[in-house]
Amino acid sequence: MLTTLAQELGTPTYIYSADLMREKARAFQEALRGLPTLVCFAVKANSNLAVLNLFKESGLGLDLVSGGELARARKINLAGEKIVFSGVGKTDQEILDALHYGSKGIFAFMVESMEELARIEALAKTAGKVARVGIRFNPNIDAKTHPHISTGKKENKFGIEEKDVLKSISQYKNSAHVLIRGLSIHIGSQLIDLKPIERAFTKLKKLADTVHAKNPLEFVDLGGGLGVPYENEKIPSFEAYGSLVRKIFGKSPYRLVFEPGRALCAESGVLLSRVLIRKKAKPQDFLILDAGMNDLMRPALYGSYHPITLVSTSATPKGQKAFRIVGPVCETSDAFAMGRKLSDSVAPGDLVTLDLAGAYGFSMANQYNTRCRPAEVLVEGNQYRVIRPREKLEDLFREESTQ
Ligand SMILES: *Cc1c(COP(=O)(O)O)cnc(C)c1O
Image (cartoon, rainbow, N blue to C red; front, top):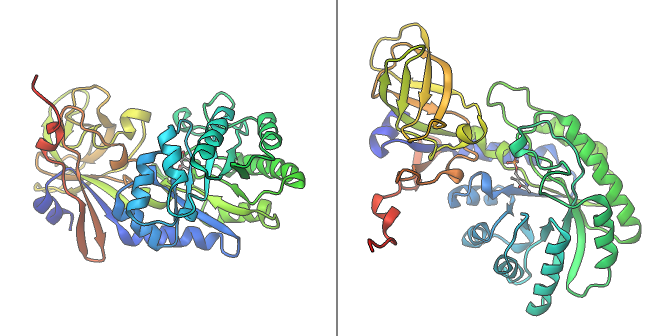
């Protein structure tokens, strides 16, 4: 299949398994069975409309972080009551668009600052609407993940500290245009340890109960963040995560909102790429791929690990050898792996996959070096469909002028 896809569509190409995405969505919901939940897929992990629609059909809502993502939700006709809108810097237009979404707006804005809350109230007033909100609580917890994707410490830009959460509740108690309906947290991404999650849940529960005693809350939003085994890390299972949720919130009066992204789609995708050049060098040869940091940014951005698999080689397999596997982009940081072992027979024209690339892959891709973003393909059983053709060169500068 991969060889055929490379021949028919060219490389680099993102390939996703619909079956595995559906299975993940099912398993996540199964782990929370019996609880009152709203599970919203975090659109930024993989925003392709076909993927969003697949998750919608699996019963999920969407967690957004921009007006652009709201437009994607509209495109798949998702009901407003299944949408939460997070993000530290929403523009007036984005807030208005969400207030006017469908007939009743969205389920809730997750508000990240006192200033934003005031803006939302003012805009809802002008629009003659009522904004349902959740306050994103910053629990000041170290999620023990990469610093660039840690979001729950007090020095991070995300969320509101406890005393201001309480202040906002009393301040907006009688507001005609802002209804504070819940509290939320999201302490980081690629979490591989349940302990910080447990501490965050416990703090959130305590704060929610304090608020709820005087000002009834409808929901708590437990965020996303569950990791995936990029490098054989031991990741808590959905069941273990579900048990933790049950332990802390099982008997609580709140509806439980979740915002998983990576855990539902990372393992379902690969980036298929061809080796362009095997460049002799000391101490290790370079394998220069036709995929670069613009196509899959995570290694350059966070030093992330992706498994790399040799799909096919024309030569007879030999022993393993360590390679420096890089992209063609004119940046030293355009490297996928250093000292990675592959068969010594690897040669130009061979295909490789960068694995676990279904999350934060295409959605972070860009056109740096005037490179077209890859095609995206959804495989279902033994069928496939192109859910986004490879970008065309003329699209890259269609709107530019030469003067
Ligand atoms: C990015 C993000 C998520 C999803 O995180 P994953 O690690 O992909 O599960 C959920 N909620 C918020 C607020 C986010 O910013």
